[in-house]
Length: 168
Image (cartoon, rainbow, N blue to C red; front, top):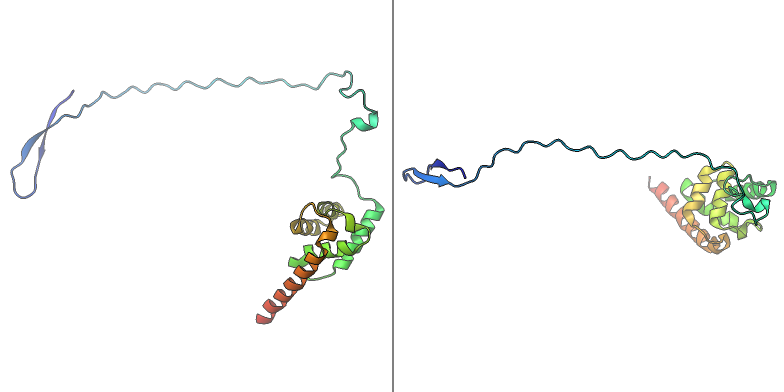
């Protein structure tokens, strides 16, 4: 232990008194060099060797994994989407999704499509804005179930928009 005498000046005019400070001063530690972490082993991954099929018991047409999202729309589907977009008409951009859902629920072929499928089809047909708007309305339900909701919400939103434009 190291000792040192410290002079402390007190308030009130009292004389300075010697005080012994009993703090232990440790010798400075020498900095140890940090050990480097071991480098991870590099794996050499190569292509799988040709051999028997994993699913040899399946027919060849069932062994493929098809990219359903990347499929091209049929002419009939493109025609249905064209009718839906045409029925949705022109209006405020905030109501686009509701107008598209309402138009799809009134179409005889698109009424059974899930909303997610309608959104994906709109995106595949080159209408990403419309696809995103439909996706925001709802996910995973049949469009026919949203007919009344879309009609009521569209009427309310159109009324609010007209009131906002009248106040400007």
